Image (cartoon, rainbow, N blue to C red; front, top):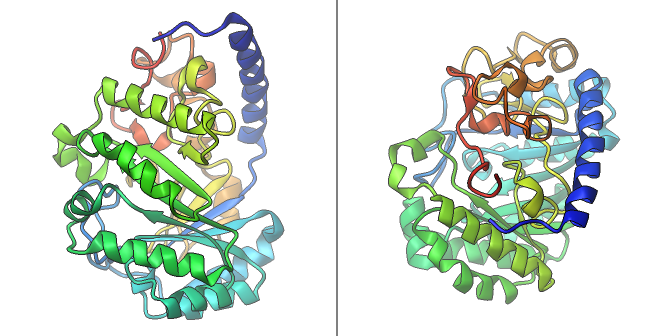
Length: 363
């Protein structure tokens, strides 16, 4: 861990203090800017790191008409000009009514984007996505061909996904096409080769994130990133950004003074429950879809509750500095900036972070 230039450290601390005040305001007056629709838990891949354990449809998934009713309610209750619908799964394109729902949302005036493995995106599908008003998409590529296929449990997954990406590029109708790579202890050695591939594709950004100790990844502890892996990954991202390539780290964690603003465009904040809410495939209402699903984190169900009422009157769990209540964080000098770190990597039984970058990236 190299010491940070004192002048830069002072500037960053000033920014972080301002951000702390801003977040306190968000706790009091949150604004729903990103609403996630988990269309289905069905997936044609079987990724070992899947946080939602997706593979087959979940029980009692929302119907076409239920999604349309949600769209109508959200339009009535919120300022949708300041909101983005984020469609995910599973693999959302497996729903036979995908385009019926998203054409309905587009006609209602929603901006929307999608997370997909892209294996089903033919030229025809890319064109239909454009017609339905999709603005952004993030496609998963988790290694070179053999590695990607093995990690995702599907033959030819890499080739199909890259074909899908090219079909999206050829359509020339989308605001942003992003590739996301989940780094683990094995595939981190392929980052340099992947970088050369990414530089040869006309994408808008490459999002590089680390595997998290959630979902199926809990069954493969040997694949989790070591401290050395994480430092190597952040140095890789920083160097690529310095060279002008649009690579960025995700929103996962507070990274300390050395890496904040170096690997992302701005300082870290967990959006769960202050900017972000989700409607799960069975109608449950929560914050970020990566968060563990239990009675504490589920805030209601859209079949029984109106989203606006839940947003305004619940979500208390996500609207305070949880580090203040955690014995593990209580005496940490960084707690006012990290706020206990991300909600998706929080231990809700022990009330402590599952991931903390202290002593890995900073003292």
